Length: 450
Image (cartoon, rainbow, N blue to C red; front, side, top):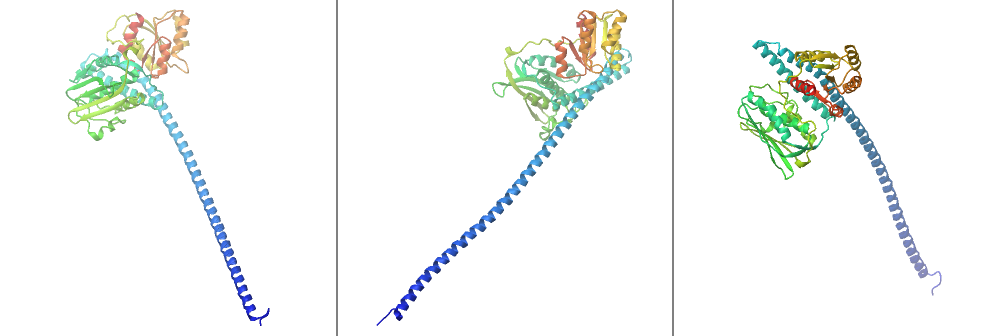
C-alpha cells in the first residue's frame, strides 16, 4: 500500500525537483554567459572609443602641424618673392644709374676720337670703345634679366614678318663676320610668325653673336624652314664651330656659363643664351640644340606661323643708319639734361658737329635761358627722367607752349621699359636709349632738322 508520503512519491518528487533545479541552473548559466558577453562588448566599445579619441587627437595634431608648416611655407614664399622683387628692382635701378656715366663716357670718347691723330692713340681709343661696348652689353643683359624676373617685360604678341628682322640683322653682323674672316649667310624668308618683335630680335641677335664668337673658321648660316607641324616654323642658326659636348648642352643655357671663344674675340659673360632661353619661355617658343664635336652646332627656335596679310605696317620703319650726315652746322639745339657729365659730353659732341647748344637742367631753367636769349631752338633734346618727378615729355610740352610752335624734339633715356617707349610714341616723339650712339644721334638730328 502506498500513500502520499511513500518512498516512491518522494523519489518522484526528488527527481522532479532535480529537473527543475537543472533547468534553473541552465537558465542562470545562460544568463550569466549573456551578461558576460554584454560586459565584454561594453569593455570593447570603451576601448574602441579610447582608440578613436586618441586617433582623432593625433589627426588633429597632424593637421595643426600641416597648417603651421603651410603658413611657414607661405611666409617663406612671400619673403623669397619679396627678396627676388627687391633684387630685380635694385638691379634695374643700379643698371639705369650705371648707364648714365657709360653714356657720358661713350659720347666723350666719340669727341676724343677726332682729336687723336697718332696710330697708337687711335688704337687706344678703339680699345676703350670696345671695353665700353662690352660693358654696355653686360648692363643691357642684366637689365633684361632683371626686368623679366620682375615681370616688367611683357611680350607684345602679334604677327611679324621674319624678313623685317633678318635683313637688319644681316647688315648688323656682316661687318663683324668679315673682321673675323668668317662667312655669314642669312637666307631670305617671307614667312610671318606670331611673336614679340623686340624680344625675337634679341633672341636672334644673341644666337648670331654666340655663333660668331665661338667659330674659328668657316661661317654661320641662319634661315627658316617648316615644322614641326603645318602651323609651325623653325628658325635655325648653324655654325661650323667646335661643337658642344652632350653633358654641357643644357648647362650653356644657364647664367654665366661660357665656352672657349675664338682667338679674335674675348669671352662673353655667359648671359646671351640664358636670355635666349628666358625670352623663348616668355614667348612660348621652343629652343632646341643639336651639336657634334668638331662639326658645329645648330640652334633651333620653333614658333607659330601667322598669315602674312595679318602683319600690320610699322609706323616707324627702321632705316639703315649711315655714318656721314651734314646739315648740322649752326643748328640751334636746346638740351635738357640733369646729369652734368652726360650734358658736358653731349655739348662737346654737338659743338664738334657745328651746333649751337644751350644746355639746361630743367623746364624752369630752359624757360629762363630762352627768355634771356630771346632765341628759338630748332630742336629740343630732353632726358626722360629729370630731377624729382619732372618728365622730359612735360618739359617739351611746356616749352612748345611757351614758344607757340611745335619745335621738333627727341627723348634720350636710360629707361628701357615699354612704358617709356609708349609714352614717347604717344607724344609723337622719337626716343634714343642710352648709351647714345653718335651716328644714330646725328642721323635723327638731321632728320628732325630737315
